[in-house]
Amino acid sequence: MKLTTISEVSRSLNLSTRALRYYEQLGLIRSMKKQDYAYRVYDEACVQRLRQILLLRKLRIPLKQIKAIFTDEEKARIVDIFEDNIRALDSEIAALNTIRGILASLVSRLNVCPEPSLRLELMRSDEIQKIVEPLGLPKINFKEDISMEELNRANERLNALQDRDVRIVYLPPATVASIRIVGGLPEIETGDLLARFVRETGLARRKPDLRHYGFNNPNGTAPDGSDHGYERWVTIPDDMEVAAPFVKKRFEGGLYCAHTIPMGAFEEWERLYVWSLNNDRYELDFRGPVEECECMEEHLDYIHKHMLPPDDASVQLDLLLPIREKALS
Image (tube, rainbow, N blue to C red):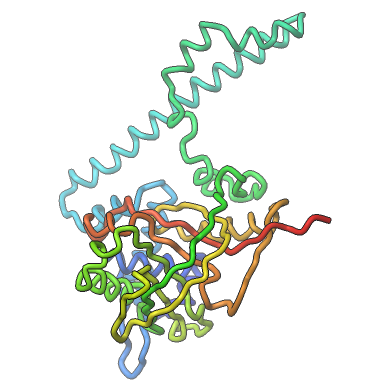
């Protein structure tokens, strides 16, 4: 039986190791430990499952529904999932066809319009307003960034994050409880330990405005992922003490660019990084060791997450890169 390391799978399928670990966290795939080998690998069945997941993701099937497809033995349920997505696509197609027709009509009218002053009047037409108004913004703007990435990857300019996709935020200084694990499945293991810490200390009651950050520490370079680590922070009251394996630390805060993603869309990291390199006003501001809180993920509404099922797809993250304003030339 052929066994493949995490970096080999990541490279062959063009899938980030962060996404691979998240799929395992959801229960979509399962790694294993080879005898006399300390670290996890994937067998051929797992790699085939990953190919199936990628195919369904390219068909715009959400991860929560993908899990149902793999775990529900009733064919009728799987058919329902596909039909729900077909109906959503039909709605989008109908909206786009309507928009296309309106734009074609405007082009025709403007081409024969003799007076420049009348051109804007055409777009104030009651007839056009009545057609466009029922569409609503959600139907007109249907996750354009994702569709461009999947359907038109070659066009990097169209696929780049726009300023409207990125927020500039100031993260305030805070005292945090830190947990870090290297090797194995550190995202999953640290997540379980942190959830237990929050529950056993009553932290949600003691600090209802708590915030939760995570980041690679270290990024790791070994093919089997053995030197990859993940660290999580949760903000705590300044006077709160923590017990091992947690460590009390001070986060100095600062200015960051932020891009919100649904849990699992970790390919967005590259787009945010490219945005930060090409922005006219801001530039990257790495302030310390690369492994120390430079490329962070904030789990939004972390208290609310504990009220949801473990695999709830509504969980969102902010991807965060440290920045500063460029010096005036």
